Image (tube, rainbow, N blue to C red):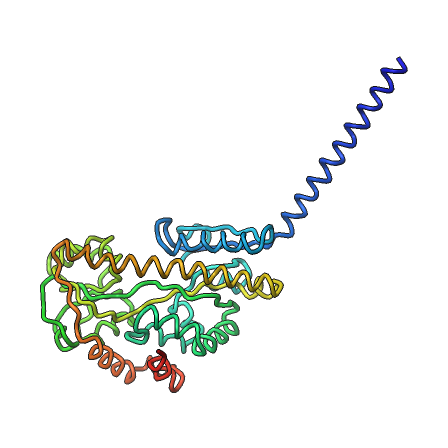
Length: 339
């Protein structure tokens, strides 16, 4: 009996020790999880979009540079916050990360509206030089002060082109006179359509295909990947590579989150965002280049007008408008001079 009792006591002691060790490990794991910084990402992008895939690059880069420090959660398809509501959510501290547009920022930082105008940014390379230099630094500081978000990197959204249902000899804006060009139905977009020389015509995106097919409209403008995805090439005959709007989105983080990070964590978060933006930019530019060949194979004429003539006419139109009144003096000249 004595031997059995000793054995029992030994087994009990071993069991208690194991439980204690397990409890300690569980507490350690819980403590580790609690020390991780939550990084909730909200984006309206669909899984196959480069703007969705870039967030995986961000997560992987951050996990590699800062192991066990961040809990990065990617929410696609606007499943966490609706498109356009992300800036307010970040300002309140309810969301850590998102990609916001120039239109989003212009609502609270009016001078940023210069990047919603035609022919301000020439191409993706110019875009990066503008936003990665003194101009971007100054504007991003204002964005941080007014919106409570910090811009980490600039991502290329795409370049809008003119797509016509009938072939025309388009060299300058004068050659688009009388063309009913579908534009998104806001005053900013319609103004851009008129500045291009066309008769801007508001029409819901879902009605564009039929409008082109029936002649209700003579053309539409969109980045080339959109033209392919919506199959507008089936009801048009020409692409005019006007390059009239090089659009951007900006990877941003809530100031509440940013200010709580250590200097090393900030460096790693910014580096991860820049790696994500570079991944997006390289793949989107490559895709746009390949798409031109696709449209030629579909029988569309692809022409390049006098882009300098378009740029001059559009910028002069904006300069005389109310939109330009909120642009800081000399800003457009500084952007144009950036090489």
